[in-house]
Image 1: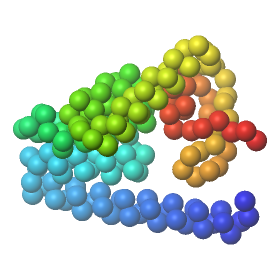
Image 2 (image 1 turned 120 degrees about the horizontal axis):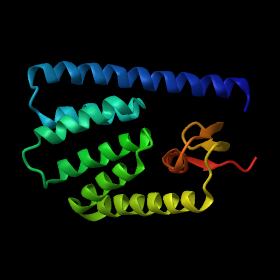
Image 3 (image 1 turned 60 degrees about the vertical axis):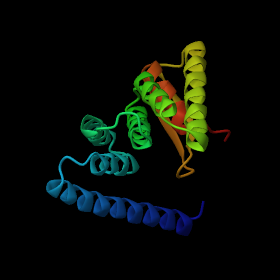
Image 4 (image 1 turned 90 degrees about the vertical axis):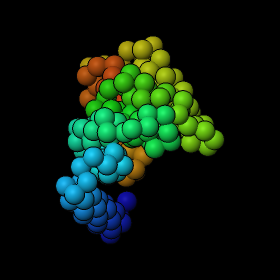
Length: 172
């Protein structure tokens, strides 16, 4: 990849992160005026997921679920889905699958199919990881977002499943 493309990619990533920070600040300010609105907390969770700040995303999604009055609506399904994404970000695969299953049960149509597909993929990746037992080593993957080649040290099974979920193997 030539330098100008790398620089453009880095600038685009920086711009995106800056936009997410700005959105986060605006929504966070709004929660001061309406601290019991679960949708504001859910949106903060989604924004933090986009920023790869999974610990805060979990905190915000948890708060949104606590405040949610209707535990069986589509909005709650979205909160569980975002909670699952945040849990994947910290390699808590089993808990993520649990939240994805709740999201699927509360959903219909295309979203339900997408979540069920994600659950199946994660369960397959977990089974693959169990068979391979790939821990205590470095694995090279191509980052699906940036396209860059990355090395990741696999500490335990949860970590391996998380890497499988977010990256694809590099064939270089």
